[in-house]
Image (tube, rainbow, N blue to C red; front, side, top):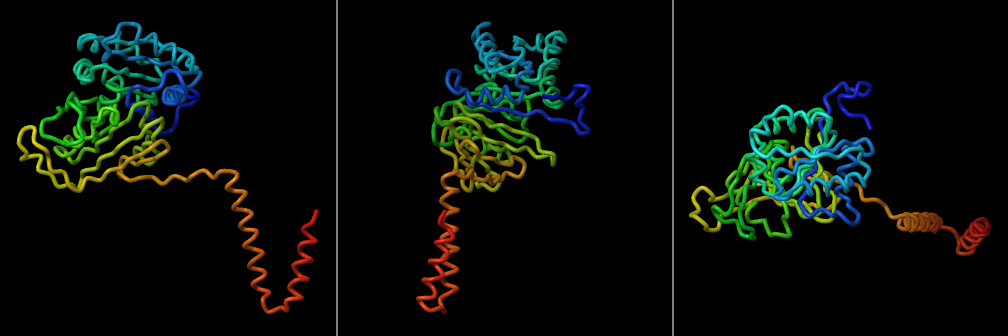
Length: 330
């Protein structure tokens, strides 16, 4: 698979890498559809994947786990890059480790730690530059939240949006004018995402379920197209035309949020993040359904011919049908 920067495959127009925003708890033992999709988009058998485990509280074993998974899925090389503080995230030797990657994978953990260590540093800028040259960037859980321009820092779950139930920090900005939340349905995080959208209606709220990915590609027209992959769904909250009292609601009180457009998108759904509209997808036709449809069309054709012959005498019509049936007999 060619990549931007390869001497024989340099495109005439800049290539922007794909994003995989994974809701956490991705399947690592069964079909592994989300991780398989990442390796495929990162280059398949030619993929060189940099695992960034900065958010995780685990030691080197977190890189070992993903290295084993990605290698089994066909990647050529998997290695860890772990800046522990902003000084390391500004170290040219650490930053340059991303130069040879065709895929970057940010693990789960503490998203506020991930943000405070890499956002606004040369390492964070290198991730943005990598995507600009065609590298696929993925992140699960904390690594998903940091991809948007605004990031959920922390806060409890709950179905009702309440004042101050969560706080927002700056993300990397790989995806602009959005805020991403993860473990969405499993941890009932609808309320806190709605609270953020109520306070900032210009932001598009994106909630991603576990073992599910919002895969974002840049179209030739310059729009961001999202497709849902995996077991669960992606919930989108569009508050552009909403009515809210978020500016006046008292601390920890429910917030008025009226006129929010909700999109519940299962696997296979496609959504234009730029125009904020659902993209229709053609449903694949089952072969047995196609056969039944063809048979029904033949029956309708016969009926139409019989109706057209209704001015013939019954005996003439019977003879015509008999001749037709004899001709159809093998």
